[in-house]
Image (cartoon, rainbow over all chains, first blue to last red; front, side, top):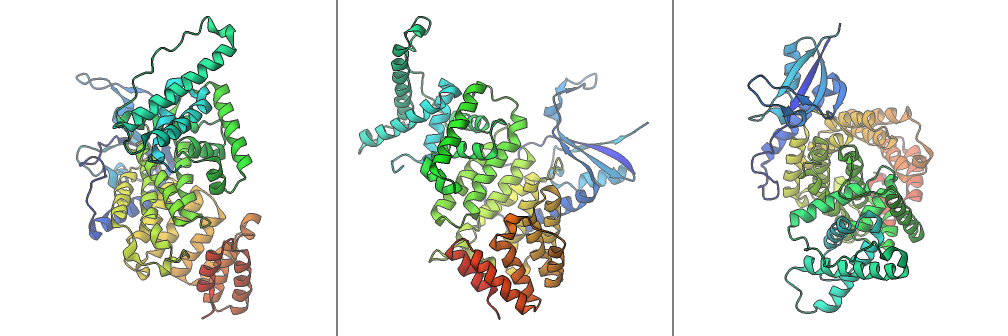
Length: 114
Length: 403
């Protein structure tokens, strides 16, 4: 199976800011989060090749019209996923509930080895 | 410390003063903060100042200055190039600044040159304001040992020339900081030897420092979120684990209506935040297990399969025979007691676990449920004999009673 690098984009804080004054959730909301977490855990338990880690310092070069952005501002971390196809890797990445939010995402790149 | 000042003040003051005077003066700073708190008790009386922190900071600062001058007079050689510090600096006002210092101090205390035990002891002393005797009681060590541990820790920081302004690679220290917070919390959560009041205080210290860490860019990571999730979810059940008479209530005996819904909600929010694909840690696994219990409306609704699977993952992440023991209990709920026993048959516990009531109690429970009454009785007697405290023995007797 091919390996794919999933670069995680840093997420903005959840809407509503700090959790102090947040209202209690309904049981169904809580079950939803629990289930999403479970699906995420389930999926990655078998697929994880490298449990990932923080990226070190570095920079990425933006496109010609873009600014140079420190990699840590852009990318929260990485993980390596094994899948048959790019679509399969994307499906795994999409199963990560923390990413399914407006304005955030994950970049999936196939790792080609000579 | 029975004063009009809460414990948190102690840590804030130590952190702010260490920033001013340096880590090499840590012990002087601690003495000065103690002196300032004593002075406050003496002088505030009916009318404490408006800005208590500023008052305390100034008094403690002067105390260190006075000490420094005395020392300097004794060492005349140094006088020439040691100008007096003329005025106390403006005391810090913003609570966020104080929080920042506190967090820095936490990272200073989690210096990789110190053992985890030393890191925990130092944190309890300088950030939680615990006395040597209190720490000794909490950690089951003699006061002498605590004193020595603290002296060695301070000396290590002094010799290393650690500065609060330059904590170094915070990212590398983050796991140690999380570990200290975790230990602080579990100490409160698990140690049945202490009264509930002390235990919930310790848990709350863990939550407070964890919250500070999680809300700061330095600690805002999925692992910290997972740590917060597991702490909130466990804390939500803490009061229901104790009977009115101080006895221990097992999961089967707890009144789920007493679980704190706000803490469960907060725990779930952190759990959601922790699922960010970067790393799966033991904190994630433990948070999932805590969530599984917290969300089950009744004991019968407990998702034991999830729990068993997650324990299996936890065993891989952080191998420990205790996790195997817990998994065996969960497996027994799903596949029957024989399956649980079979799991344990394959593992040889280390001596410390063999000598613990837990190992005997779990097997007694499983054998009884499997109908092996002789073996169950033998192990029950063993578990009761090994139980460290009365309340634990009573809870075991109820759970393991025949019939």
